[in-house]
Length: 75
Image (tube, rainbow, N blue to C red; front, side, top):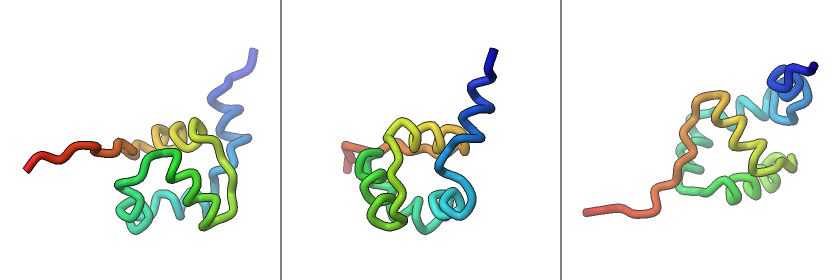
C-alpha cells in the first residue's frame, strides 16, 4: 500500500526556489487579497508554472499559510 502523503511530497511541482518564492513575505502580502484561482494565474504569469488550485491549496496547508480572502470589511 502506498503512503500517499509521501508520494505527493516527492511528485509535487512546488519545491525549491518556487516554494521559497511563494512563501516569501513580499509575495504573501502582495497576494493577500487574491483568491486561490487568481494566485494560480499570477503564479503562471510570474514564474511560468502551471499548477492546479487544489495543489496550491495543499501546499499552503502543508506550510501552515492561511490563504483565506476577506470578502467583507466592517468599518
